[in-house]
Image (spheres, rainbow, N blue to C red):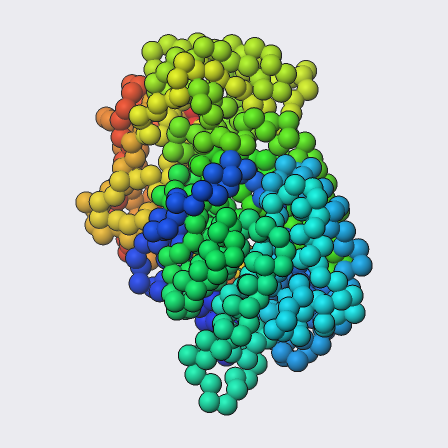
Length: 614
Ligand code: JFZ
């Protein structure tokens, strides 16, 4: 047990954290997780004319900056590991002490113009910044609160005004994050961290909403010029009428402004997926975004060195664009307003690639394939297809099936050098040549010119004989088993998730994948799964046509049940090679897994990997 928490506070922390995330209150009900986490199709999405720029621009900067940034993960000499902006919650800081801390906030290194220029250099088109996070502190001047940067800190600078002016001057769009529900220092606010006033009832949320949220959101919509996005967050538990009221304010003062789905109540112009979620398969939502971090925590934390490399950032941007989404990447300035050197470097380096490959990012409409490939991913624009090559394939060859249209030309985007290709029947083969001895951009992109837009009718996973293919839980057809999403935190608030095929009912259960085999031959099969003790020793058969293989699964173990971080114990995942499977024929077929001798409820199957065996 973490020495800083009593069992009670751990429980309380888990419950309040979970309740503060929109979906968790009903997580046990086991209905579509997508729906609960706001990934469903909203009734209001897809209508707003502003969605055109949103979808074309693809790439935005997210900024988490507040009093918590000055703490940087430390309270009274103790480090709290997790998302830095939740430190008041993690360290159980009393409201008075937290508010008094504002006198330490001194943004003397903040240069709004420099920040906007960095976002530009990174290839980003919009900046969305925390005007007020759950801590309740306004990073702008406000008539209805004294807990603002202008009144409670020595600097007295309206930081949002400075940023708004710099954005205006540099032609950058501006958005404000506003925590409309949680306000930890406001006696009637959601999740208030102090003792509620006498006679308090949950209906008093209305007082906070009318006296703080409505005027502050109005201030943000009227005092800072054109606002492109109001980014609301964690509406969980808030009555729908409040979301409706916020929507009304935006429509009244800035009808061009977009609103994300975390406004709650099924409102919003586009869907924000669960944090850091790069979807492997095209999501159902019409218009959506992924929000992600350059390291782990949203706000600055002194120990957080897990910086994504420039290439990883570009890959994640491409994966999101390929599934038809937009990408918003966060940076966390320190309290003084300066950015960690690593964040600056990684944005500048990735920006060089984004700028020079903008043709394959901005204004594109995603891949014609619902899922990505192990070697990389695709974007498209009109008759052009862009192949983003993350991992150079063996022999420099790539195969794609069923584009439905003839390819007329192929070249590298960065230097227009011709790329060889053959199109034989439904299979296109692209010959990249050797990777050796040439200077490559971070991600080489092949531009394919087609006679007409690609018309992929076959979405079965391609097994191309050249590169590994992964069959995901979410792509399976199921009988007598289920796909579940599991979410967990490793550090506080840093959510991870995976989809699993699990709850196998009997030996008649099966999970089936459609596969499109471009090259018959031998494949090394491996699986990733979790298995609890009761299910250990289950036997399974994997079948493809007349060929099959049998294997047994062992317990994968648990993460410690007395976890340092709150949360239920979680089974670990195993990756195991099963052996070599012969696929004697090419073409559309099915691969199936079924229990041969089931113990307990069997394994939680994450994926099956088929790697060409030679
Ligand atoms: C929220 C905030 O609590 C957090 O501090 C940060 O600002 C982040 C961007 O948003 O956290 C969430 C909200 C929703 C989900 C996960 C974390 N979700 O739906 O998966």
